[in-house]
Image (spheres, rainbow, N blue to C red):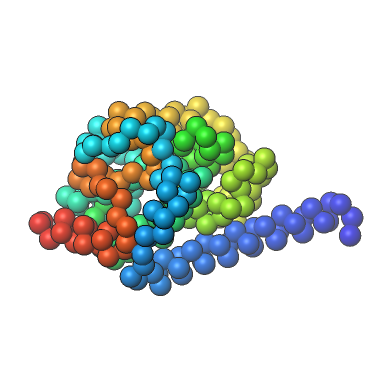
Length: 238
């Protein structure tokens, strides 16, 4: 097999793997029931929430109200809003990802979920991953790219060819690849990600993931049941 055909074969293989990862992560989220996150805290800061600073967090308030520029799903008219500041390269964020998906699936139109980017400076590919998700969002596939990026975190995190991997995800999602590449490098998308990051700093965020429920910071739940009960209590008030 010559080099050109081998390269074409490799790209096709990566696209198929990307499609399989989406299906696998969605199946995991659906199957997820009573699922403990306690192990997140056994490893301390090495695996758990990655921080910008060591100062403890008191109760934080969301500084920036939800707007039309936010990436969100669920019921936009809901009085219960769960917002997450997240870093695609953060292992803890990837661990919470299927839990959050299960919460969204269970509570459906009772809540609105808002995803905001908070790429930590020590994660070299985190910004590019955020740009890739937003670029896919320009073609109506933000959440699909979001799922692929978290599902493939071990493949692209720390990989100097991460952009090529994101482009293969775009192909798997049947995006216009040239538009995706242009948007990936656009000032508008970089500004969007930077604005999310600044709004997190203004809200006192210094670690990922950080959750806010109706504008107030949540101490990260240690189990699915704990997260479920918090959201249930919030929705039962309306």
